[in-house]
Amino acid sequence: MSTQIPEQETETETETDAEQESSQTRRVSAERTRAGMDQRAEDELSDADETVELKVFRYDPEVEGKKEPRFDSFEVPFTKGMTVLDALIFARDHFDSSLTFRHSCRQAICGSDALFVNGSQRLGCKTQMADLEWPVRVEPLPHAEVVKDLVVDMEHFYDQMESVEPYFQTEELPSGELDEQRQDRANREEIKMSTRCIWCGACMSSCNVAAGDNEYLGPAAINKAYRFAMDDREGEDMTEHRLNIIEQEHGVWRCQTQFSCTEVCPKDIPLTEHIQELKREAVKSNLKFW
Amino acid sequence: MSQSYDRGLIEDFGRWREFSAGMWAWVLHKFTGWVLVGYLFTHIAVLSTATVDGGTYTATLQGLEQVLVVRFLEVGLLAVAVFHILNGIRLLFVDLGVGLGSQDVAFYAALVLTAAITVASIPTFLGGF
Image 1: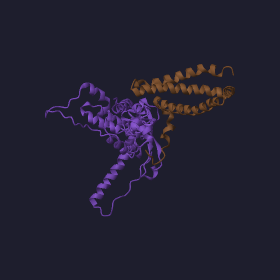
Image 2: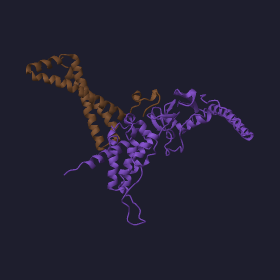
Image 3: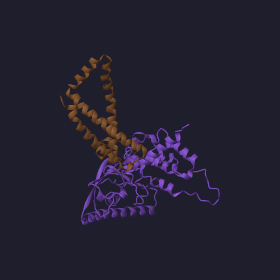
Image 4: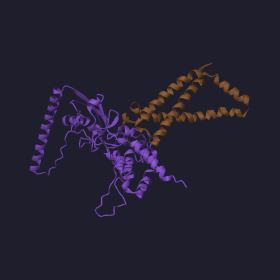
């Protein structure tokens, strides 16, 4: 658990007295909090009825002792309703402040904390510790470059998302200046599930095809394309343009219906169903009978 | 994506214990497909003895049927073919967008049916040896 590196003296001689003093107070108070932290962790652990062991993947190419990937164990007091994210936050705040993971809203809408928990891609904030087998193993998303601990590089995922032009565009504007662009209820129902995507990247990480083919758009991007291609308000020309993007070599046809993405999606989007529907749309737009 | 180091525990087929129904269906479909392609060559080789004359063809087949391993291979071939057909039907429905919610049940059903048909075929293939 002692992965913290000793604080380095970085002050230079040119520093003024005031600065020195303030950095000294900061250091002293930091030490005091750390001592308090250990004490608090001990107290909370001995007070707890039940504790759970968390095995967390650690890796940091910039720190000498962490260049070799390894697993650290943390003992965390279990409370009713505790999520994987709660447990990670406890471990970070009580044992090792260098433990790194992304999180923000804690209510499954920001898409920051997709993790590989007990061998499956899940959102940390949406996964109950009580539902998992203990000890709980937490790793960064597979098939993505690890930056540090549980943080992976999402750049490639975002590139794929952007390549399908994930925004509304149309040439068919209503005639009146103040007219709204109405969508009928049936059409809204059709795209409802696809609008729920939170860009967490769990599907892309679970996809066996995306793992082997770096250019494959991936389930999330295709789902995004579906959301707009199926939107009636965009008009026929735009739909054709969208189908042209997704029916390319590394588009929908790479999907081999393994259902891995549908299985892991934390927002329950029927991804495979959407990909299959786009395949059929692509065929239909290319078939001509005359 | 390329990995800058070996993450050992997380690599794909080392995770086979965590595969879901859809993934198993895909793996088995690929496997049975390749087995059937392989069988096609031996099939053509055996059939082509008929181009010599009828007697040679009959002798070849009778000779093969007397080898116990061939009898077992025939049972295996039936199992492989039946699973490939049943899962092929499942994939047809998946492609048509019908019943995607029960694709896992369809896979299990294909497995059970394959097992039943294979077991039922054993007396026919191994009998009279």
